[in-house]
Image (tube, rainbow, N blue to C red; front, side, top):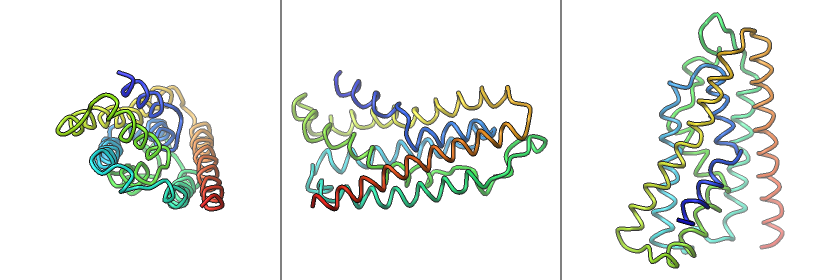
Length: 203
């Protein structure tokens, strides 16, 4: 039980993946970003399977700073796309349009490169799984359940974003919120970059 409480508590807290999910809901793309949610879940499952069966031999703590750097760069890129987009309500969705709709690979990459995701997985697979006697096929089954919860986190944020977005009737307000979400994503990227510099100095 503590495994699920720990992972859900961390995955449902604010972070780059959840910010992006909320933004997608705000600009009316909740239904179009289902692939993004699935990508997030698949990235979590991949990490759990790799680390669950191979432990820290796959992703050592010394590699986390470099994962943080890649994640920061990708998050900055996505933040830039959000801040520079122009949403027009009369088109039914943002001018981000279909070419800027969050995809499966957006979700997979942002979660796979999110050090928060790796830091969720490492203690679970190296400490909690052995303590709870989760071995063999149980590693796969428990990892699938946790990953479904992981996919649901940005989905829930996106749903709330969609509810809020429907109450907004002005292009300017929606664009302001979109830029605020982009700015928050940039702040997350700064912290990820900071983790890189701190981690490199400790190696």
